[in-house]
Length: 204
Image (tube, rainbow, N blue to C red):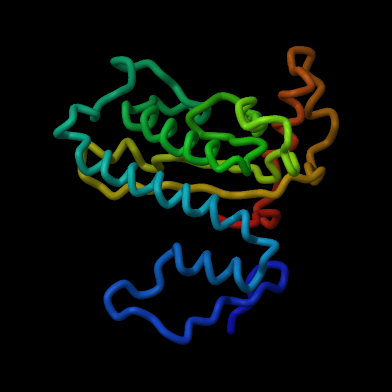
């Protein structure tokens, strides 16, 4: 059996359905059974799965629903210097909200936005004061909701790219990188959370 990151073993499937095969949901359920410490990733992947299915539907219907073309009539530029399409903005909102609603995210960063966003994971006040435990979002997500969106009008395939990091103090950039008078403490913390090497990924 192949090894996963940090020595985790690939789940064993002694029986599979001939019609559905091994679905993402079943894979994550089995992985969580095998490694209980990864149980929170199960809910994250369930939300990502819902989001990308929604994005797929939006892309397929984009021409019919009038969602092709540039956002705001043109001129909207993302952090990579690319002109944003209407679907860039819509799909970014879909994936961002899906990740936010998991309650597991501390910070999320999108290619379609200028800066990372800190997520408030506090429970609603209506839940009452007797909360068994409160835990800040322990994961960080970086993503491009619709990679290759400039190809949509030509019917060329597109995709969603995402990565999940675990919250830690592992930023390897020098302190001088953050010597910006206009950068607040919250923004510095968000940037330190997201600017990490690929080998620190928990999932992607």
